[in-house]
Structures are given as C-alpha cells and as structure tokens.
Image (cartoon, rainbow, N blue to C red):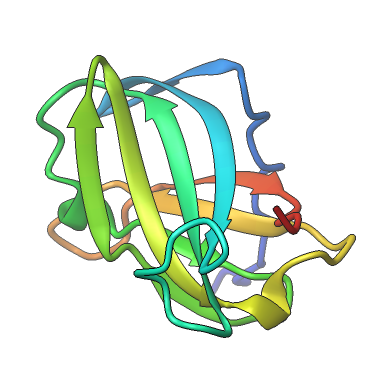
Length: 131
C-alpha cells in the first residue's frame, strides 16, 4: 500500500499580476481597500469593509467559487456583496476592526467549483492596513 503524504499549498499569487485561472479566465487582483465607519456611516462601529477589486470576466457566479477572506488571526469572512462596473469586480467583506493594521498577511482565496468539492484553490496574500 502507498503512503499518503501531505503537500504544502502553492505560494499565494502576487497582486497586480494577471493569472489565468482554469474555468474562470484571466483574473488580476488590482486593489484592496479598507473602509471604516469614518468613511461610510453605513458601516457599524468597530467593523470595517474590506473591498477586493479585480479585473475578471463579467458575469462570474462568485458564490460557486467560494470566495473567502482569511484574516491573519485565523478568522474567515465570506463575501457579503459582489459588484461589477466598468470591467472591475468588487467583492466586499465585513470584518472586525481588530484584524486591521497588523504586519501579518491575510489571504483571499477562491476555490474552483467541482462536483466532488475538491476544486483547486487560488490564493492572494496582502496585509490589511488601517485606512
């Protein structure tokens, strides 16, 4: 019988570079912006909205790609809103202020849809700076 060996996940992609994602097409993460209640009073006190902007094909069914923001502390946020305008897609995540302003990087991850639930995962790493 064979031995099951774990493998390390591939290094995260670099923001600003175009990546060809099978089943999706070309995707370029262009900007990560943090918005607090100081900039938008609709955001609750003690919370922030992380906006991940990308150039991606129009009409992607994002929920099937299981987009998740994994913060440096291990917490995970699922995308609350998706907006498309002028060739840019924005996924917005509601997070506590406590995950902002740390040197450790957070990860944004999408997982390719698959019948067996074992789709390939694609990751980008970046710090979540205070605005």
